[in-house]
Length: 326
Image (tube, rainbow, N blue to C red; front, side, top):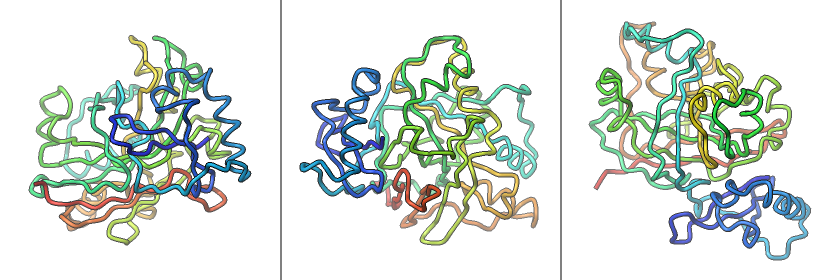
C-alpha cells in the first residue's frame, strides 16, 4: 500500500490511500481516519485498506481524486517518538578524517539519537532558514513500526515494520559540534524534519527490500535542479531489524515510532555523490585542504526522490524551498 496524509486544518490530517503511480487517491476513512489510528490498529484495519488499494490501482474506485503532493503533510504529521540513527559508518568516517575528530564509539553498537517528533514538515512546505547557522540537509530512509515489545530479536523487530519513507533531516551545522560535545543530544542543531508525501508498505519496494534487511535503492538528491548525489541504501552497516532491536533493548517501542537511517552514504562517495553538504565539504577538505561547497542559502531548492526498477517514483519527492525566517 501507499499512504499519505492530506492537510485539513487538524493536527493529524486526513489519511488517504495513493495509487501505485502516485496519480490518484481515495479517502481511507471510515477504515482509518488518520495514520496514527491505522498504525495503532494495523492488524484490524490494514486488510480492508489493502483491498481498497487494489481497487484503486485497477481504476475501480469512483470516488478517487487526483493526488496532489502539495496538499500533503508528513505521512505522520506528529508522533510519539522519532529516533535517528547514524547507520552508515562511511559518513562518520569521512567527517572524522576531515576534521580530525576523536569520536568515542563502541564497535558493533549503532549510534542513535532521540529527536523531536511534535512538528514535522510536509514535502513541499517552504522551510524557514536562519542563514547564519550553516544550514545543511541530510537525505535519509526511514521506517515506521507497530508496537514492538522490549528486547525483541532483530527478526521480530523487522516484522513490526509497517511503512517505509524518506526524509530530509535539516541540520544547522553552526550548533552541531558544540551540542555533540555536550553529550546530551541535539537541540538547536536539528530543527523540524521534512518527509516525503507518501509512506509505503515494504512489499511496495519489491526485491529492493533486501533479504539483508536493507533498502537497495538509490536516494536521488538535487540542489537547485543540479544532481548532488545518488547514494544507495544497501551499505547501511546495520539492518533495520538490528537497529530497532538496539533501540528497544530496554524499552517498548510504541506504534508510530519512526526510525531514520541517518545520512545515506556510500564508500564510493566521490563517484556517486553525497546526501548532505557536510559530507561533500569534508571530502573537499580531505582532497584539497579546504571546503568550497556553500551551506544552504535562502532561495535554495532541494529535491529528494527514490525510483523503483520500473522507473516510477516510490515515495514521491521531498521538494522544498528555503525561505527567510520571519
